[in-house]
Image (cartoon, rainbow, N blue to C red):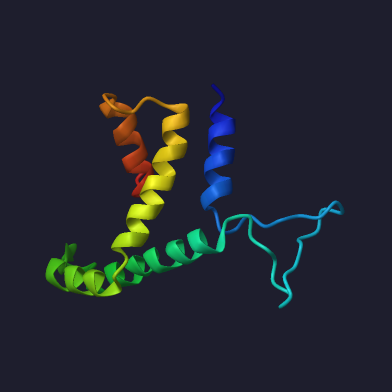
Length: 121
């Protein structure tokens, strides 16, 4: 198994920064002149909606007291209605992870992916 192959497939599926390149090495543009992304429009839109959580966290986190207003965060997060986006992205990620790793009973590997997903590592 190649970790490089895994990360290439994972990034290729979920990284909105990856664009399609022509034979000349330049980005292929859409009709509006924007680079075409390698990820599907559906996944891109789900990622964009889910990333709104970052702003909600920032608004509800007090750096001075190091406390999160969990009530405010919960209320604003619920108002986003992104549960289906989260489930869809998670299922797509698990499909790729499961092709390369057996994570059913490997708590260390599961923890590593969770920490990575949280930005902790």
